[in-house]
Image (cartoon, rainbow, N blue to C red; front, side):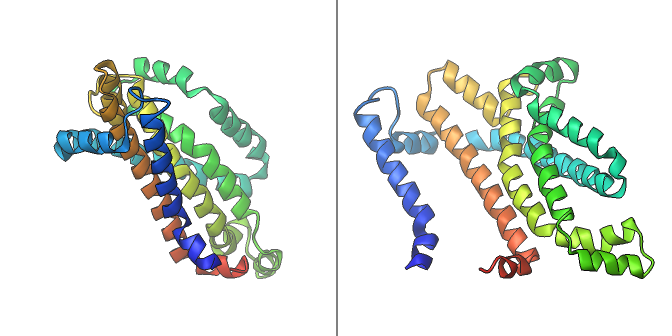
Length: 253
């Protein structure tokens, strides 16, 4: 019974959410909140040819931001383990990047660089800190006996890193990567909202739809963005399970 509930719980939650949405759209927020059917009809009328250019642009920005953010996090995490003296500086910079208000730095980046750079940078900011924390947690969770064995055999910190720490860090790292994937999408969309010289992107389309009072289209764009973020989360989790089959065993699953 527990297996069935865990397997179908997500789908049941979506159905309940749609029912609540439909009820609210015809009662308390009638005329303000479009019904699910109205959103679907609007998406069908617009056609995929309308949505695809915006989806493609935002996905490119999100993927670039995700890749750069993950790469920076991995390099910084390895530096912390290989050169502990740098830990305080790196963690302070990471916390500062996490605490910077995105809406405050976005316009500055837009004025300074233009193009997709500000949007990619915002995606990096929403990926870097979460990934760094997860990777550090994983790298530090290595088995002490294995690390001692590398030392006894004449290996140093680099040997410990490549032969033990990176492998043992995979479960925690993929948990962080899974959470960071939707963050990259959010950062790219926020970058679209802040404007720039690129007239494509989900955030750009949502801004135009809002200005034109196309409420169902705005909701359709938001749902498409949410589905893409959920897919990124699910795919990253699946890859993590395939590459770390021992993680579930260790957790007692």
